[in-house]
Length: 243
Image (tube, rainbow, N blue to C red; front, side, top):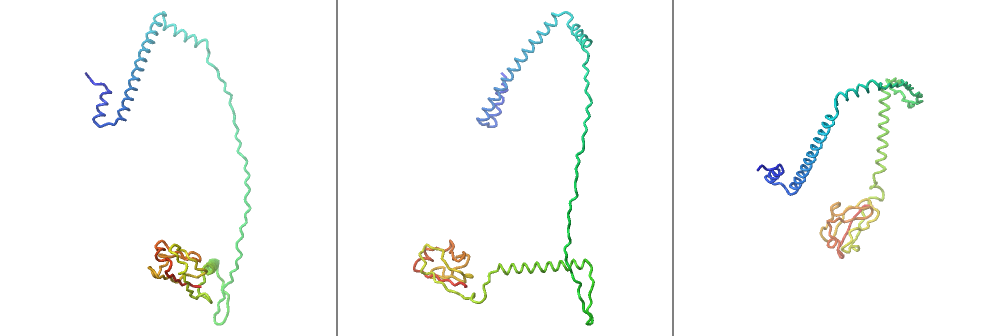
Protein backbone atom coordinates (compact mmCIF):
# COMPACT_ATOMS: atom_id res chain seq x y z
CA UNK A 1 0.00 0.00 0.00
CA UNK A 2 1.58 3.32 -1.04
CA UNK A 3 2.33 5.83 1.70
CA UNK A 4 0.65 9.20 1.73
CA UNK A 5 2.37 12.53 1.21
CA UNK A 6 2.00 13.30 4.91
CA UNK A 7 3.63 10.00 5.91
CA UNK A 8 6.48 10.64 3.46
CA UNK A 9 7.17 14.04 5.08
CA UNK A 10 7.13 12.53 8.58
CA UNK A 11 9.68 9.89 7.51
CA UNK A 12 12.01 12.55 6.04
CA UNK A 13 11.67 14.63 9.20
CA UNK A 14 12.54 11.61 11.35
CA UNK A 15 15.59 10.79 9.20
CA UNK A 16 17.15 14.23 9.68
CA UNK A 17 16.24 14.34 13.39
CA UNK A 18 13.46 16.91 13.35
CA UNK A 19 12.21 18.59 16.54
CA UNK A 20 8.75 18.34 18.12
CA UNK A 21 8.07 21.90 17.01
CA UNK A 22 8.75 20.96 13.39
CA UNK A 23 6.48 17.90 13.73
CA UNK A 24 3.63 20.06 15.03
CA UNK A 25 4.19 22.50 12.17
CA UNK A 26 4.07 19.57 9.70
CA UNK A 27 0.74 18.43 11.20
CA UNK A 28 -0.71 21.94 10.72
CA UNK A 29 0.50 22.09 7.10
CA UNK A 30 -1.00 18.67 6.34
CA UNK A 31 -4.35 19.69 7.87
CA UNK A 32 -4.37 22.87 5.73
CA UNK A 33 -3.61 20.87 2.58
CA UNK A 34 -6.48 18.45 3.33
CA UNK A 35 -8.81 21.42 3.80
CA UNK A 36 -7.70 22.92 0.48
CA UNK A 37 -8.27 19.60 -1.27
CA UNK A 38 -11.79 19.39 0.14
CA UNK A 39 -12.58 22.92 -1.04
CA UNK A 40 -11.21 22.15 -4.54
CA UNK A 41 -13.39 19.01 -4.73
CA UNK A 42 -16.47 20.98 -3.72
CA UNK A 43 -15.71 23.64 -6.34
CA UNK A 44 -15.35 21.01 -9.04
CA UNK A 45 -18.74 19.55 -8.10
CA UNK A 46 -20.36 22.97 -8.20
CA UNK A 47 -18.81 23.68 -11.61
CA UNK A 48 -20.15 20.39 -12.96
CA UNK A 49 -23.65 21.23 -11.73
CA UNK A 50 -23.49 24.71 -13.30
CA UNK A 51 -22.29 23.32 -16.65
CA UNK A 52 -25.08 20.73 -16.57
CA UNK A 53 -27.71 23.38 -15.83
CA UNK A 54 -26.39 25.60 -18.64
CA UNK A 55 -26.59 22.67 -21.07
CA UNK A 56 -30.20 22.01 -19.98
CA UNK A 57 -31.12 25.68 -20.53
CA UNK A 58 -29.48 25.76 -23.96
CA UNK A 59 -31.22 22.52 -24.98
CA UNK A 60 -34.65 23.71 -23.78
CA UNK A 61 -34.59 26.87 -25.86
CA UNK A 62 -34.78 26.30 -29.65
CA UNK A 63 -32.25 28.10 -31.77
CA UNK A 64 -30.49 29.42 -28.62
CA UNK A 65 -27.41 30.65 -30.49
CA UNK A 66 -29.46 32.40 -33.19
CA UNK A 67 -31.51 34.15 -30.50
CA UNK A 68 -28.40 35.49 -28.81
CA UNK A 69 -27.07 36.80 -32.15
CA UNK A 70 -30.42 38.51 -32.92
CA UNK A 71 -30.40 40.26 -29.54
CA UNK A 72 -26.89 41.56 -30.15
CA UNK A 73 -27.80 42.84 -33.64
CA UNK A 74 -30.92 44.56 -32.36
CA UNK A 75 -29.04 46.20 -29.53
CA UNK A 76 -26.45 47.58 -31.94
CA UNK A 77 -29.16 49.05 -34.26
CA UNK A 78 -31.50 50.55 -31.68
CA UNK A 79 -28.96 51.84 -29.15
CA UNK A 80 -26.67 54.37 -30.82
CA UNK A 81 -23.24 54.88 -29.47
CA UNK A 82 -23.16 57.68 -26.91
CA UNK A 83 -21.81 60.99 -28.11
CA UNK A 84 -19.51 62.48 -25.56
CA UNK A 85 -18.64 66.09 -26.11
CA UNK A 86 -15.79 67.16 -23.94
CA UNK A 87 -15.24 70.89 -24.23
CA UNK A 88 -11.69 71.99 -24.70
CA UNK A 89 -10.40 73.55 -21.59
CA UNK A 90 -7.70 76.16 -21.83
CA UNK A 91 -5.52 76.57 -18.84
CA UNK A 92 -3.47 79.70 -18.68
CA UNK A 93 -0.55 79.57 -16.37
CA UNK A 94 0.97 82.90 -15.57
CA UNK A 95 4.51 83.08 -14.39
CA UNK A 96 4.81 84.76 -11.01
CA UNK A 97 6.23 88.22 -11.03
CA UNK A 98 9.31 88.25 -8.89
CA UNK A 99 10.98 91.55 -8.27
CA UNK A 100 14.45 90.98 -6.88
CA UNK A 101 16.17 94.12 -5.78
CA UNK A 102 19.93 94.01 -5.77
CA UNK A 103 21.33 94.10 -2.26
CA UNK A 104 23.01 97.33 -1.39
CA UNK A 105 26.21 96.08 0.17
CA UNK A 106 29.14 98.36 0.57
CA UNK A 107 32.51 96.90 1.42
CA UNK A 108 35.12 99.41 2.45
CA UNK A 109 38.76 98.55 2.15
CA UNK A 110 40.71 98.95 5.41
CA UNK A 111 42.44 102.26 5.63
CA UNK A 112 45.99 101.18 6.24
CA UNK A 113 48.80 103.55 5.53
CA UNK A 114 52.11 101.83 4.94
CA UNK A 115 54.84 104.45 4.85
CA UNK A 116 57.52 103.90 2.24
CA UNK A 117 60.82 102.67 3.68
CA UNK A 118 63.62 105.17 4.13
CA UNK A 119 67.08 104.15 2.89
CA UNK A 120 70.28 106.01 3.71
CA UNK A 121 72.92 105.87 0.97
CA UNK A 122 76.21 107.72 1.47
CA UNK A 123 74.73 109.84 4.30
CA UNK A 124 71.82 110.79 2.01
CA UNK A 125 68.28 109.81 3.04
CA UNK A 126 66.00 108.67 0.21
CA UNK A 127 62.44 107.28 0.08
CA UNK A 128 62.03 104.02 -1.82
CA UNK A 129 58.75 103.35 -3.62
CA UNK A 130 57.34 99.81 -3.14
CA UNK A 131 54.65 97.96 -5.10
CA UNK A 132 51.29 96.62 -3.79
CA UNK A 133 52.60 93.06 -3.35
CA UNK A 134 55.38 94.23 -1.05
CA UNK A 135 52.91 96.38 0.91
CA UNK A 136 50.66 93.35 1.46
CA UNK A 137 53.64 91.28 2.63
CA UNK A 138 54.61 94.01 5.12
CA UNK A 139 51.01 94.18 6.40
CA UNK A 140 50.90 90.40 6.87
CA UNK A 141 54.18 90.53 8.77
CA UNK A 142 52.94 93.32 11.02
CA UNK A 143 49.72 91.41 11.70
CA UNK A 144 51.69 88.27 12.61
CA UNK A 145 53.91 90.26 15.00
CA UNK A 146 50.87 91.79 16.73
CA UNK A 147 49.33 88.31 17.09
CA UNK A 148 52.54 87.00 18.71
CA UNK A 149 52.59 89.94 21.10
CA UNK A 150 48.99 89.28 22.18
CA UNK A 151 49.66 85.55 22.62
CA UNK A 152 52.78 86.26 24.70
CA UNK A 153 50.79 88.65 26.92
CA UNK A 154 48.06 86.02 27.39
CA UNK A 155 50.64 83.38 28.40
CA UNK A 156 52.22 85.75 30.92
CA UNK A 157 48.81 86.49 32.47
CA UNK A 158 47.96 82.78 32.82
CA UNK A 159 51.36 81.62 34.14
CA UNK A 160 51.59 81.68 37.96
CA UNK A 161 54.42 83.77 39.33
CA UNK A 162 56.49 81.66 41.69
CA UNK A 163 59.74 83.51 42.02
CA UNK A 164 59.94 87.08 43.19
CA UNK A 165 60.33 89.14 46.34
CA UNK A 166 58.84 87.27 49.31
CA UNK A 167 57.66 84.29 47.20
CA UNK A 168 60.67 81.99 47.18
CA UNK A 169 60.62 81.07 50.88
CA UNK A 170 60.42 77.39 51.77
CA UNK A 171 57.93 76.88 54.60
CA UNK A 172 57.91 73.69 56.74
CA UNK A 173 54.58 72.34 58.02
CA UNK A 174 54.13 69.73 60.74
CA UNK A 175 50.86 67.76 60.35
CA UNK A 176 51.67 65.13 63.00
CA UNK A 177 49.03 66.41 65.43
CA UNK A 178 46.30 65.96 62.78
CA UNK A 179 46.98 62.25 62.22
CA UNK A 180 44.26 59.86 63.45
CA UNK A 181 44.63 56.78 61.18
CA UNK A 182 41.56 57.74 59.10
CA UNK A 183 41.95 61.25 57.65
CA UNK A 184 43.78 61.46 54.31
CA UNK A 185 43.07 65.11 53.40
CA UNK A 186 44.94 67.89 55.25
CA UNK A 187 44.79 71.69 54.96
CA UNK A 188 48.06 73.32 53.87
CA UNK A 189 47.00 76.90 53.14
CA UNK A 190 47.94 79.30 50.35
CA UNK A 191 51.05 77.99 48.60
CA UNK A 192 52.92 77.97 45.31
CA UNK A 193 53.62 74.25 45.28
CA UNK A 194 54.54 71.44 47.66
CA UNK A 195 58.26 70.59 47.58
CA UNK A 196 58.27 67.32 49.53
CA UNK A 197 56.44 65.19 52.09
CA UNK A 198 58.07 62.86 54.67
CA UNK A 199 56.78 60.55 57.39
CA UNK A 200 58.09 58.38 60.21
CA UNK A 201 56.33 55.28 58.82
CA UNK A 202 56.73 53.61 55.42
CA UNK A 203 56.77 55.07 52.87
CA UNK A 204 59.12 57.54 54.49
CA UNK A 205 59.31 59.93 51.49
CA UNK A 206 55.90 60.30 49.75
CA UNK A 207 55.86 60.56 45.97
CA UNK A 208 53.77 63.25 44.24
CA UNK A 209 50.91 61.97 42.04
CA UNK A 210 51.67 58.35 43.11
CA UNK A 211 51.15 58.85 46.88
CA UNK A 212 49.53 62.30 47.09
CA UNK A 213 48.06 65.12 44.99
CA UNK A 214 47.52 68.84 45.54
CA UNK A 215 43.88 69.94 45.55
CA UNK A 216 43.49 73.68 45.99
CA UNK A 217 45.01 74.50 49.37
CA UNK A 218 44.89 70.88 50.57
CA UNK A 219 47.06 67.80 50.25
CA UNK A 220 45.18 64.55 49.52
CA UNK A 221 46.83 61.14 49.99
CA UNK A 222 45.86 58.54 47.38
CA UNK A 223 44.43 55.04 47.76
CA UNK A 224 47.99 53.62 47.71
CA UNK A 225 48.54 55.03 51.23
CA UNK A 226 47.09 53.05 54.15
CA UNK A 227 45.98 55.70 56.65
CA UNK A 228 45.82 53.21 59.52
CA UNK A 229 49.59 52.66 59.20
CA UNK A 230 51.28 55.63 57.49
CA UNK A 231 48.89 58.29 58.87
CA UNK A 232 48.14 56.74 62.27
CA UNK A 233 48.09 58.76 65.50
CA UNK A 234 51.56 59.03 67.01
CA UNK A 235 53.32 59.02 63.63
CA UNK A 236 55.19 62.04 62.24
CA UNK A 237 54.17 63.79 58.98
CA UNK A 238 56.18 66.77 57.70
CA UNK A 239 55.99 68.65 54.44
CA UNK A 240 57.64 71.69 52.83
CA UNK A 241 56.01 74.11 50.41
CA UNK A 242 56.70 77.42 48.71
CA UNK A 243 55.05 80.62 49.86
